Length: 132
Image 1 (spheres, rainbow, N blue to C red):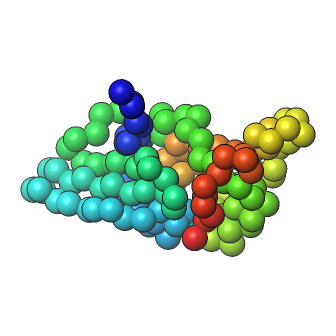
Image 2 (cartoon, rainbow, N blue to C red):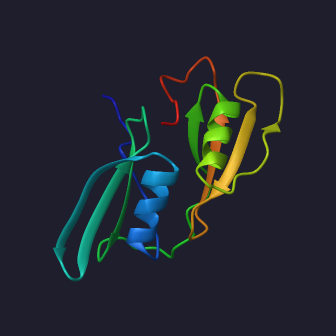
């Protein structure tokens, strides 16, 4: 039996600001943005090439904004990914090379609420993980 990771819940304080950051600055695809009533809204976005999405919402997501830490995205070209993030106005750190082996290089950034993300370069495993 396969156990696939499909969704990561991201606690945020402002859905519209977060939608803009994740879709326009990071290039995630907006899968749906559904309002059920004035107290309930669900927003799902997917990184390019990923089988796992992120979900944020009003009235459905528990957790304090900014408490998500350590989620990793994987790309095949870290320099290109970093350049695209910088071009889109994302405050991203310099490339950290922990070792020369494939998978030993990272960049880090936070969303507007302080949720922390890592981007790891794994040339051998990345499947179309280009930032679009």
